[in-house]
Length: 296
Image (cartoon, rainbow, N blue to C red; front, side, top):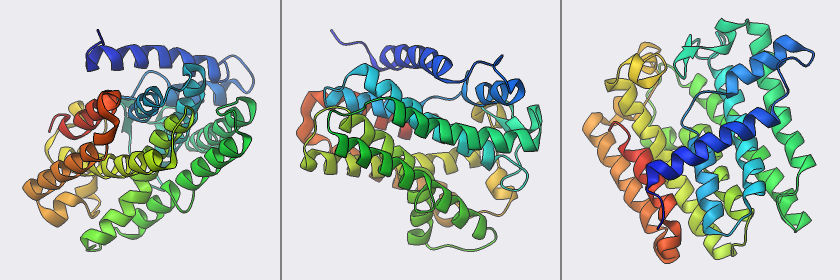
């Protein structure tokens, strides 16, 4: 009998924390302050949604857990670096992340900048040191996928659009384009990486890519709703920051109810893309439910 979703997720989260602890440089290794700050930024926080998506897609495609650990860690390190940089005064200027002081507040701005740089390069170091696929060409393609998803045509590019959009009225397609890059690219990469650590056809990979696109957008829509309705203690980060900074969101563009409806449509589309996988996609379906229905 399979474990329920909460038990499955908790088991992976707990085990994955041990994986991250082992892969990050020890805090006592020189330069100690930088390594301590790297561990501070990554460990003991977050829901690990991206790693869970990689594990779920990998289980669907029969991937070895040792390969999934590395794939999930690389994606999470990229995500953690992006949060450190996004929180800095030159970006979103936030003081709270995952329920604790942001990295530049706990340490200093220069250290936070180096933490982000070091986490990003560590992610790619892991890909050079570990085999994720028996096919060298596929592994190289996976490295390219992560680079694109995190660079100017992915997450970093989405952040640049976000910064340039402050005080502007964006259309729905413009807002979607921003978040397909800023939030969605790394979520899609997590799903595709997990699948490609195992055995998957191109047709099925396309289905999983569509699933990742839908849940990635839904994740951001729900974030915008929560940012407008939940308090700081619930979010683990400063509530209402987007409104205070006059940033365009799905709530400011559509209103709360229409944003909720959009998230539900994306949720249904994501689930529809998994139909042909049958029971094997149970965990991906449960993650889609979790992403859309969390405190919603």
